[in-house]
Length: 139
Image (cartoon, rainbow, N blue to C red):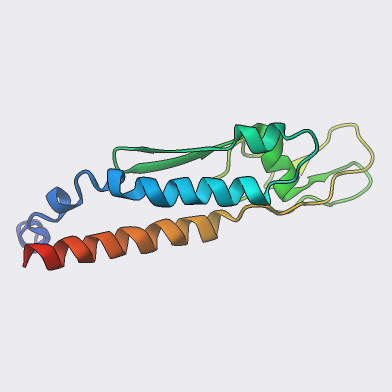
């Protein structure tokens, strides 16, 4: 397929997706509420820090950094409790693919409260649904 054929195939697809972000806001708000409900609580700082935003066609989530450490665990010098961190998670481990203490002997067990793959799948499903809905409305 040539570039011209591909452009013709896409047609006005990008224009139809324009401003889809506003339609994602209810899902993002629901996901934030679910994350807050699932987050481990000591003083509640992590739970209060969880936010989600739609910027254009981008979806962003954020929380205090230690929330990621709790989710994936942190290995100590005498154990390996940390799990592999998804590359979409911030902060990403400084070395390797797991969080590690430099001097602490014992690590922290993971307390899984979010799954990036599940979050991504929810968003993709909603974008697909919205796109199909817009396509049906334009026919």
